[in-house]
Amino acid sequence: RLEEKRHFHCGPGRRVVRDVACSGYSCPDDYVLQDDATSLSGNTTAVCCRLACSRHCCPSGFVVKANASTTPGQSTAECCEELCSSFMCPTNFVLKPNTP
Image 1 (tube, rainbow, N blue to C red):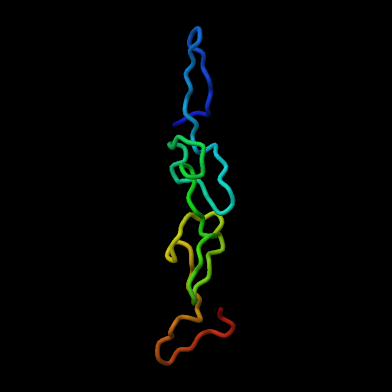
Image 2 (spheres, one colour):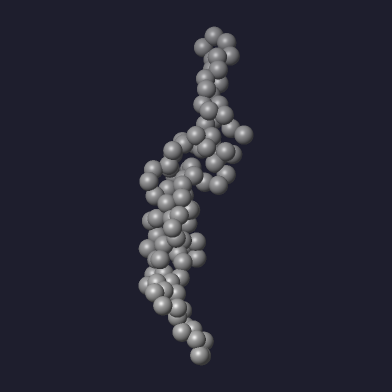
């Protein structure tokens, strides 16, 4: 597990810098921390973060998931839920009333 960046003096004129773990990095809006942030070393969005589903545009017949801002992903499978209105009911069945 990585530690916060700290400078340790190891004698006259020498110091060692330990890496910073991504788990301490704050991702900007529409990004979430990488799943393995505690084992990643870095302090940039490119290294520490993934795009969140809130940046994904779902196709017609789908709606973005409710927790999109905290869910990593950029695909319909990861980020969207199919609306019932796009479902084709089998013969002798109809959609329930007031179904989105």
